[in-house]
Length: 414
Image (cartoon, rainbow, N blue to C red; front, side, top):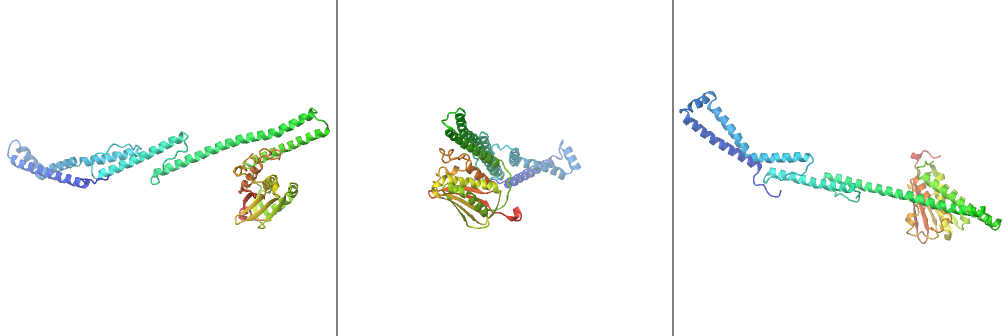
C-alpha cells in the first residue's frame, strides 16, 4: 500500500477507550443524579433503597459502568475486529490452498496494510501456481519444449526449475529412444542389405556352376574363386556384426597391466608384411618408454587392427602409416596417421557410426563392412578411453586416448 493510513489502529483503540469512558462517566453521573432525586419518591424509593442496602451504591455503579464501558468499547472497535477476523479468514483460506481471496474493505490503517500484503501474496501465489499448472498441462500434452518462468527469489521457483529439468530430461529420453529405434531399424536394414548382396552373388555363381553354364574348367574355377571371395566377405561381416553386438551388450573385460609401447612394437611387426603388400611403410615413434595402461589385449588388438586396415585402404597414395605414442601425467595417446585422400568434412562426424562408409560405391568390393571403426570406438570406450579423428589435405589421423595404469587400483605390477 502506497497510501499512508489516516487512522492508526492504536489511535482507534485509544479513541474507543476514551469515548467509552466518557460515555460511561456521563451515564453514571446521570444515573447517580436520577437515583438521588428519585430515592424519596414512590414507586422508585423501594427498589433504589433495596439495591443500595443490599449491594451498595459503589457496586451498583461499578456493574453499570463496567457493562456500559465494555459494550461501548466493543461497538467502537467493531471495525477493527471485523478487519482482523477477515485477515484471519483470508489466511485460513490460503492454508487450504485457495488463493482467490475476497475484495478488501476500504480502510487505511496497519491492519489494512497487513491485509493488502496477504492479498498480494495470495495473488502472486495464485498467478505463479496457475503458470506452473499451465506448464504441466503443456508438458502432459507432449509440448516438452515449453518452459515455466523461474522466479529465483520465490520458493515455487525451485518447483518450476525442477519441472523444467524434468521436461528436458524427458525430452532427451524420448529423443534417445527415437534414436535407438531408428538405429535399430538402420541396423536391420544395413545387415539385411550387406548380407543379401554377397549371398546373392554366391548363389548366382553357384547356380552357373550347377547348371554348367561355363566354357571350361578355368572359367568354372574363376566363378568358384569369386563365390569363395564373396563367402569370405560374408563371414567377415558376420564376425564383425557379432563382435560389435557382443561388445555393446556389456561383455566382460579381462583387463590387466599392459605395456603399450611393447604392444605397438609387436603390432607393427605383425602388420609389416601387410603394409608392404599394400605399398606402404609403417613407422613407429615412441616418445616415452614404459607407458602402462590396463587393457584387454585381445580386444585392443582388434581396435588397432581395424584402424590400421582403414589406413591401408584409404591411405595407399601416402606411402606411410605413422603410429606415435606419447603420454602425459594421466593418459596415453596413440596417433595412427596416413597421408592418403582426406576424409570430407561432411563425413568426419559420422565415420564411427555403424554401417557408415566413406566410399559407398567401392566399399563392398574393397571388403569394408562399415563396422570396423564402430568396433574400434566400442573397444576404446570399454577401456574408459576416447577416440576421435581429424583430417585435412596433408594427413588423416586417429587419436586414441587411454587412462594410465594406477597401481593401487589394479594391484602390483609383475
